[in-house]
Structure formats: structure tokens, C-alpha cells
Length: 116
Length: 188
Image (tube, helix red, strand yellow):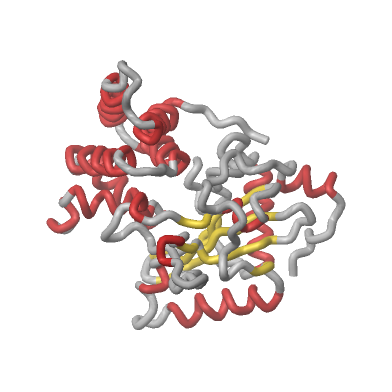
């Protein structure tokens, strides 16, 4: 993996795009450099949480893929991160978008889909 | 040719999924439709096949990966399709939207939160669809391929298509385009 790819901002782009070729790179990165992978995912979530809208289904889709494809320790780390961020809303003052962002992450890491 | 278009609703329900409304419509999507919205008929199929062919050229191979199409199967079994377009009402000037129809760029160099888009509900007047997803060119071993999925957050998140419904979608797109169409198993 090129050095330029190890910038969390660049890795975050792969979560935004999330095509098969992106996921191939992300899967390798999750094994070789989980710290950058996690930093990039946290950055991706943070940017959504600060916005005025959120594609929560995109977040959930990525989270489901992480739950299937990445190590249990990486999954636990991101689960802890999302729980911690939601805990910061104990007074209920944070925005709906913020809450939806981190809830989608948690749900994706744990949800079993219902089929038609 | 879409052999499923116009078939009875029982068959379509079983093969592709029952009709369902969108789980959510964003306020900027109400009453809007993508500028590029068309039915995926024989002429559009030909255009997509030709597009993939010409985009294998070095000049276009990267640019062709910069945006996606979104599609939905409507009540009658037609596939409606459009570029995933930006919804930039902020640019409206004197009744015109200068950037209307501009594709939403794949998430490189920016975060998707920065630009709102016209999503799947706008393909069907914010009404019902059986199944919906994305169609895009992605690279594998140096060549571009069409990839299709049924990963619509608004139509396929709460009731996910079954494995056989996903296979039917893949088969339909292979019939509409060619056997090189690949399935994007993003939802596992």
C-alpha cells in the first residue's frame, strides 16, 4: 500500500465510495494498518455527525461489511467508539443527525437483515 | 429487452419483491426528478454497453468511475434509471438551476455530507418500487465492468431482497446489458 494511502483523509474517501475495488483496499488496510482504518472510519462518521443531513443507510452498510470482514478487535473498537459518542448525548442536547450517525454504525455492526 | 415489464403483479412480487414505499424522502427531493431519468429500454441498454466499451480507453477509464447510476423497478416491472445527481437548489437563479443534472461525484476529495443528492425516491415520484439499487463502472484487473446491486437505503434497507430476488436482479441486468455484468454483493 502506498504511503499516500495511509492518510486517514484518503482512506475516508474509500468509505465514501465503497465499491468493490475500494473494499479490496480497505480489507487489506484493516489487516495491515488497523489504526489508520479506524481513524478514517471515525473521521467519516464525525463529518456526517456534524452535518445537516446523513445517509444513515450508507453508514449501516459499511458497518455491516466491517462486522463481516474485519477482526473482532477492530469491530469491538468501533462499537465502543459509537457507544461512547452516543453516551455523550446523555443530556439529549445533541442533534438528530449526530444520533442517527452513531446509531446507524452500532446497528450495522450488530444487525441481522430481514428478508422479503 | 426487459421481459418482465408489464407482467402481472403476482409474478413481479414473487420474483423481484412486493411494492413498498420509500422509508424516507428528504425535503429537497419532494417534487424533484433527476434530469437524466429514463426507462432502461433497448436504446438505453445499447448506450450503456457502448459507454462501457469506449470508457476502457485510457482517456476515460478513470473519469468513468467518478459517478454512479441509480435504478429502481417500478410498479409495472420497468427499470427506471438516472445518473445520481446533485440537488443544488442553492444555485437556482432566475428560475433556472444552472447545475441541474450534474452527477454526484464518487467520494474522492470531499465528504458526501457536503453535497445533497437526488436519491432513489426521485426515480418514481417518491412513490412505490419493488427493488432499487446502483449500477456503476468499477475496475477489476485493468478493465471496467458494470456492477449492479440492490442496495437502496430507502427501498431495500428495512426489507432486504432475498437471495433469489438478488439473483433475479443480476440476471435481468445481464439480459439488459450483457453477461459481463457483475453482482456487487455489498450487503453480504
